[in-house]
Amino acid sequence: MHYNRIFFVLLLLSSFAFSNQIDKSINVIEKTNQKLEKYQKQINYHDEKKEQLFQEYKYVNQEIKATKNYNKQLQNVITSQEEELKNLEEQIIDIEETQKNIYPLMEKMIKSLKRLVELDTPFLLDERKSRIKRLEESLARSDIKTPEKFRIILEAFKIEYDYAKNIETYQEESEDKTYNFLRLGRVALYKQSLDLKDYYVWNNEIRGWDEIEDSNTKSNIRKGIKIAKKQENVSLLELPFKIQGASND
Image (tube, rainbow, N blue to C red; front, side, top):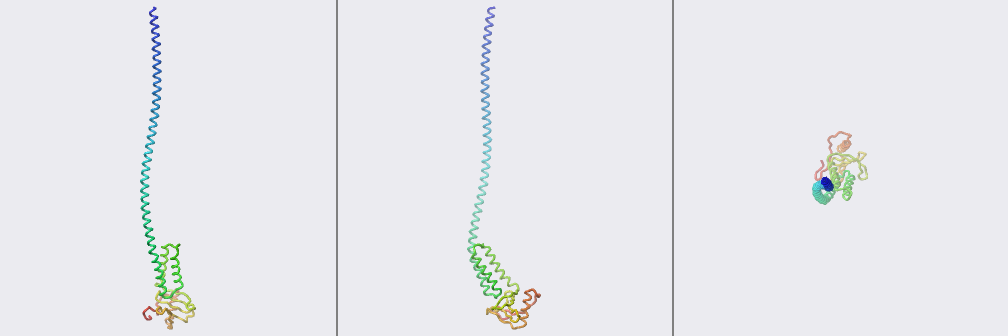
C-alpha cells in the first residue's frame, strides 16, 4: 500500500510536470503563431505595396509612351510649321521684289495713259485728266495696297479702250461757248452750237477745229447726236473725219 501511494504521488507529480510542459509548448506555439501572423501581415503589406508600385510603374510607363508619341507628333507639327514659315519668308521676299519691279511699271503705265490723252482727240478732257491725276495721287499713297493701285490703273486703261467701241454725245464749254459734242469712237469728234448754227470737226493734225459748211454733214451730225441719245435708230452716217497723214473722208 505504501508503495502504491508513492507511485501515485510520483505519477501525480509526473502529470503535473507533463502538464506544465504542455502549457509551455502551447505558449511557444501561440507566440510562434502570433509571430507568423505578424510576418504574414508584413508580407501582405509588402505584396500590396509591390502591386501598388507595379501599377504605378505601368501607369507612368504608359504616360511616358504617350508623352513620347505626343512629342513626336509635336515635332512633326513644328517641322511642318518651320517649312511653311520658310516658304512664307520666300514668298514675302518674292512679293517685295515684285513690288519693287511693279512700281516703275505702274508709273510708266500712268505716263503712257497721260500721253495718250494729250495726243488723242480732246473729248471729255476734264474727266480723263482728273482720272489720271487721281492715279498719280494714288501711286504715292501708302494706305492703298499695290494690288489695288494696279487694279485702278488697269480699270483706267479699260475705260480708254472702251471709248473706241461706242459713240457718245455730251455738252461742254469750248472757247467760252457751250456746244453739243458728238464722239464717234476715237476716230472723230464733232461739235455743234446750241443754236444749231455752228458746226466743227476736230483736226488732229493741226490740233484744232475745222469749221463745217456742208449742210448734209450738219444734218448727219444732228442725226448722230440723236442716235447717241437713243432718240433715233442706228443708221449710216455720212461724216468727214481726219486721219493723221490722210485726206478728208
